[in-house]
Figure 1 (cartoon, rainbow, N blue to C red):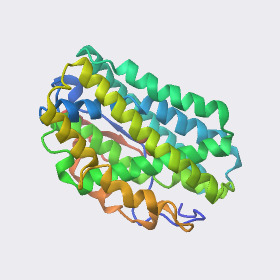
Figure 2: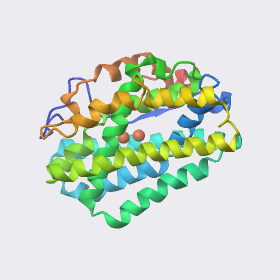
Figure 3: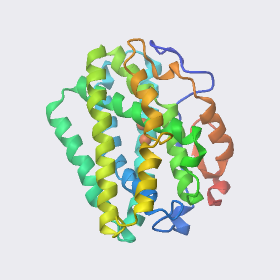
Length: 296
Ligand SMILES: [Fe+2]
Ligand SMILES: [Fe+2]
């Protein structure tokens, strides 16, 4: 199973579909579920809407070239990748629907992400679409790494909503090399992937900020300057979430870059140990954690 051409997966890493259930569905959550901060809460709320169009784009771009993959291990990994991404979308849509019921304009946020990705679909050929996916998968993996590396990012958040983000973060790390290895095996070029990265990251961050400010304006919270400034520092301050991702951004420009050059697989194992209660079913496991799905 470890016959990927670029770099073998670290020991214990196997992209695995897990069916999950989170208590936010039954228990609900506050509109400002993240430490009572409108900025932080609405930032994550709008980001959740990106996954519907985003993960569909990832799956479509990888599947479009799936028949050309000759490595059976990578073909198998692609199937699990698609199942993981599909399940991420399903869970985030539940969160989005509940946010819509709170009167938050999640449809507008999602439409903005979808509009950009639809434009890319129209102009990019399959290998360039896959380069976009690689760039965005590198973003989600870097984001996930920071989520676990800096506990203050999730501090004060409703634990039932946070559980969703932690699961998603762990699986983004787990499958961070899947599309990259497909891209490389199918002859994707160095210049193709770095050119796309330089456009994709700023665009995604720009859309996130635009959506966050739109939701803050809708809620008449833009005047809460302490929260807005604190939120901008949370993202772009010296120790901010986006700022801390800069080394990952630049690492992608190394010609010999590979997602697993940075072995952070221990974070996946640690997440799995403390999050068994949320896993309803895990492929390849004979454990029966169904009862745990009721837990918070
Ligand atoms: Fe995902
Ligand atoms: Fe992903």
